[in-house]
Image 1 (cartoon, rainbow, N blue to C red):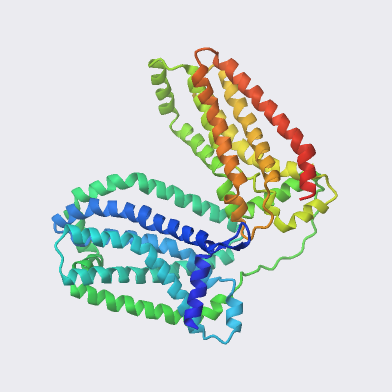
Image 2 (tube, rainbow, N blue to C red):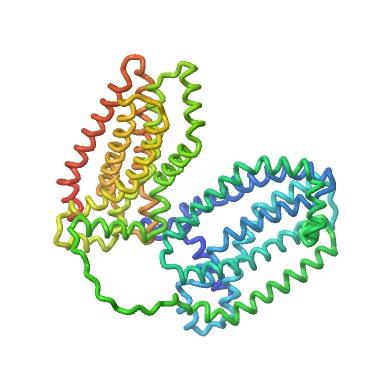
Length: 534
């Protein structure tokens, strides 16, 4: 029974490699093999190569200085962080709030067997992530430093210790996430906020890593002594891989006891955790007067409700707005530096019109990253008949979808334009073009996205990620919009010696307006009819 349950857990984790959610059917053997090869290439080739490079940079100077234990401590902490983050959400969804808890508990299966299978799946996933860090670290150490049987055994044991620590941390953190998820009301916004915070932290660490590593290597002796004096257990942790049998024995006993205690706690509390539900607060009925809404307002509220209810939808389709806000913040905070840089460009003889075209291109290309209107039709799925059966015109429904993208993209675009207009010393005509063209472009790409969404819908998906991320229409919209934005600067670069920037931008705006009118006319007539009979 344990083997069957473990196979079920691992199949759920890697379900996407065997099942095509977009086509709602099993993948072919060739497709499955190719997906597994790509996954291994990313894990071993990309991540493994990255940590091999990091290990090679740290190992030689630290081992030469007699600080091999510090090298393993650093790589071990990285492995624990990566493994815990990689398996925490699997623990949250697979152990605590799994959708099949009720079904499994109704079967004659011992609770301990269920817990053991799920803990094993968490352990194997954590081992996979930590091995990407630790296996290259161990191999590099064996190449750089003299080894013996104690070091070989200690290195292997350190990998096992790290995976066990990850298991315990994943259980604790997964429990915290599960508890919070039962109490939070606006889970979608919290998920989006945490995801964006993680991305920001990742890039901050990425850009600071090189200077931190250099400082660590130059002051290894000082940092090593501080660790010994104030955190001696961490020193013993690093000594495991150097074959220190005392450290191996201490950590083996401690980690084994913690793992046994974790399993005991989960076995006793699993039924309570698995059957827990979110608390519901009692509310006293109060009579309220509801304001009557127009058809357009009601449909727009419905579309915004669908948009804000899905973290996947918001995260994958609104990165353009996020980056536009970041650019605006950078302009506000570092406005003087940007203005000084422009003055230096002018001093070198760079054409002011070229700078204006670059600014417009940056805003347009960034705005093109938003594509929430493209999957909006497909996301209705098998429930599309509800909208079709309403006593409203199909165009009213489509225009509501269109307005979501225009509003979510247009407001950050206006903010970015305002910062550019206030900060940079351009002429009135140039500033007007900076304000007009990105807004026309925003409407154009929204219309183009809705056109693609109607012409290439996917209404048979089983996972909402299929229409959001995997649709060919999404790819065409994003890359096509970015290419159109890049054409602004590319064409001007080729003909700038023959045409004035204001005339060129005016012609560009006219072309965008004509294209938008053509798409709008098609969507209102032919597109609405196609939607009616999807």
